[in-house]
Image 1 (tube, helix red, strand yellow):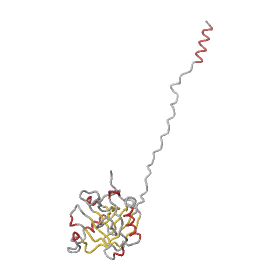
Image 2 (tube, one colour; image 1 turned 30 degrees about the horizontal axis):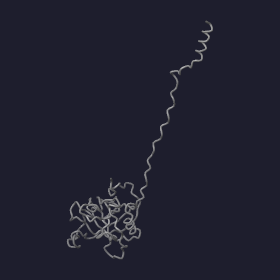
Image 3 (cartoon, one colour; image 1 turned 180 degrees about the horizontal axis):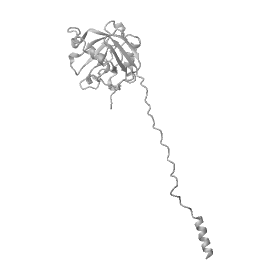
Image 4 (cartoon, helix red, strand yellow; image 1 turned 90 degrees about the vertical axis):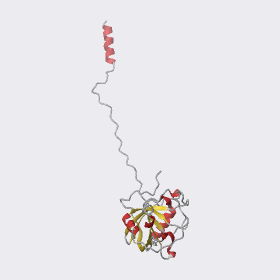
Amino acid sequence: MLTLFAALALAAQSTPIPPQATQLPPPVPPIPAPVTPVVEADTRPYVALVTDLGTIIVRVEDKRAPITAANFLRYIDAKRLDGFKFYRSTKSWGPANQLIQAGNRGDARRNFPPIAHEPTTITGLTNCKGALSMARLNPGDATSDFFLLLSDIKDFDADAPGGDGAGFAVFGEMVGGADVAEAIFNAPISPTAGEGVMVGQMLEPQVTIKTARRVSAPADAPAGCVVKTP
């Protein structure tokens, strides 16, 4: 009997003791720090057009429309845009087709050679309100003249129904000075100047671009509308 009791006592001593209710819980893994998204710097060029009526700031889409953008910036960097004129307002076309047009109204020798046409179907840009687009007669003959749109004119896009399949090449947009563009649009018009559809659209007096220079990106530059969204 003593031998049995001794065996039971030894067995009890060798039985593992269950964890106590007061045992500390396992450590909680640390919460990872939030990841800050990387925002790419805006490297697109910005240009200030200083006119008789104030300053307009445009952003140039040099990655999406490299040929047209490089042509415009060539005029800027050579200071050839200085003295060019805003000479046209399409008030006579009604509220759905508002634009102002600028370019060389003097010595044609100040123009660089014409550039290849970049349709919106290739660049992924669109002729929305504020768009900076190249003026032309035929695809491939654009030189220095450009539009600033004061309304959406989607008929200017290359894929517009009933269009010529080429449209007008967008290469940037207005990001500042919309009030100045409106003032140019509403400036006095000559009743007789111009030819064809441009009769009744020629500004008198014309608005001079005093200087056109690259500037830093404005802190409050809007995202804009010219880049088409899926």
